[in-house]
Length: 555
Image (cartoon, rainbow, N blue to C red; front, side, top):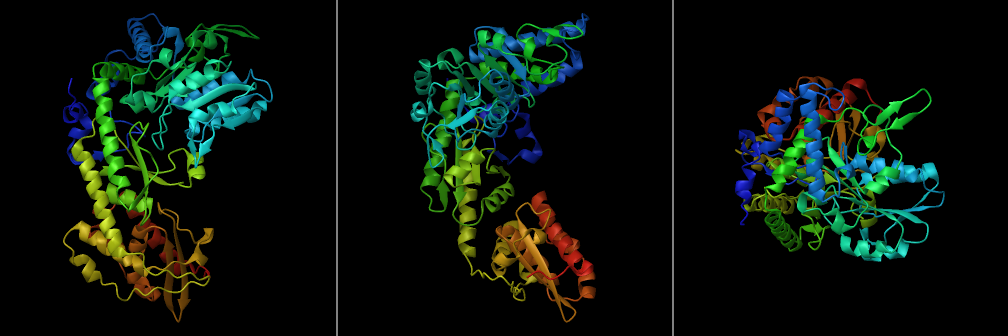
């Protein structure tokens, strides 16, 4: 069966909306878009069968209960579990991992060990840290090289005190997919519990927990075209049966007495409270949707796009690749050589290209690899060749602008020196007919703002700027002068625009200006992202407050 990304994409209503006609969505590792059947399932639940489950005998309750158990059976088939009793619904992978950390560790002995890796999402680190502190357990990490776990060396940290091994099935930060068969071979001869965090894995390949050989598997629906706020935990029935419940309340009890209670049987023992029923209906629709697809062809398409991205970025001298092409689920992570990752993200956002910048809830990986902040582009089956071409073209254009701007001369002084804004011509900025020209001009203006390490302290930090910015002020002879610094060229450019109008002016001259109107007339409020516009106004408010409030001079 041949796979057409264009045809597949037509099943997702978000892309058919007028405002999304040119959207290139490459933030799929954070969340995927929803196909029409999933949207309809959530809507239909509220329209036709909204009622609580198991607790009532009326028609709507019976229908809702039947829906939940049908979805449980679909989830069983999705991961090839042996029984529906092995499927526990939860809010997602994060809640499932917290459940496991709580329930498994409470029965361990002080000194017992838990093994995780540097590539884990925070959801597979923090719960184990909390449990280790609570029960005096020891956390050990898979050996790594520059932050990248060497899963084939897992045996080096396993010993007679190892009780739990909880590892990612695919890193959300760099896309690394460990060879689960190698891990299975290493763990087979040991009496340890093996958890696979499948939040990323489930979207990109068929899951067979029997073949994987793990004891527990967790995933979130919104990562594989389902709704947010719901996911499930697979666990071997005998292990779930022996575990204590996590939350107490309705649904998870069979009988309540004055001093103790008797808990419900699996799977309801772990499902206290009212379930997210509409989301469960959407989960069922997502599982049906995936069952109708050619999953093998989807994976081949995603892998082709991933190889393409890695090939192009690895050949460019303007980017440093962090992710690797081999054993990759569909993520390219990189940092720009020139400018900042935040600048690049906003450049892409202004071209309606959605990526993510940050540590991606994987700070350990960032700390150990030396790259705390990366740009992450992640693919899904609805991404087309034209999406990738638009993304790569936008990167090329960004590099051209950065080369045009150049590195500039930066000054380092504990006493900040005023910058010269006199050569900045507002008429030149306004003369550019399109936004791209004005954007390039603003980046050229950023060269005027020199580096000022001495002002980079908390009291000078401007609140409201997405990228860090520092602004200081001094008054001389009744005129007001300002010093600005930031790591973001865009923020420097916007700051240069602001200061070109007010630097060296009197209070009366500054108060007579209508800077919001100027900002609007230049088209900046229309084309800049909301966060960038907010940053300009935050700088303006801080400057006006320094003038009116008489803040002390910063040195």
